[in-house]
Length: 152
Image (cartoon, rainbow, N blue to C red; front, side, top):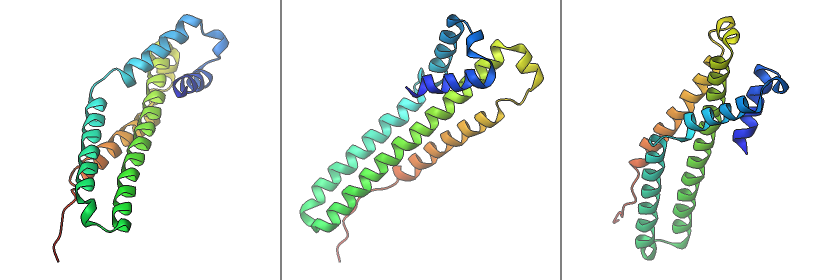
């Protein structure tokens, strides 16, 4: 699973895994899980996006008799691309969050790392912030889309 891979990479980068006790590794996994997946903000966006996509698909099915098969297929494909891109953005956010949480955990558990480099997690924190901004931006852009009839 990607969570285990990120934890392994963080463990390898910060310290030798053989020196970590199994309990510390489990603590790190729990910390990453709690930091990245035990919250409702992301779930709210996911639920809202699912509702949005469902509404657009319903609108498209209502408009189907008025559309050419080519136009219908293009709109259907576009909605599928939106869903795929949403999933990609969420995966990017999850990976960035896991890296950030693993870095934070290493700093919490290793005071020598924290004192040696106070800016150790800046890169992962920045990437996490960027990934969240992409999701919010995409969601706000797509939320305004609406299928409409035009009479010529």
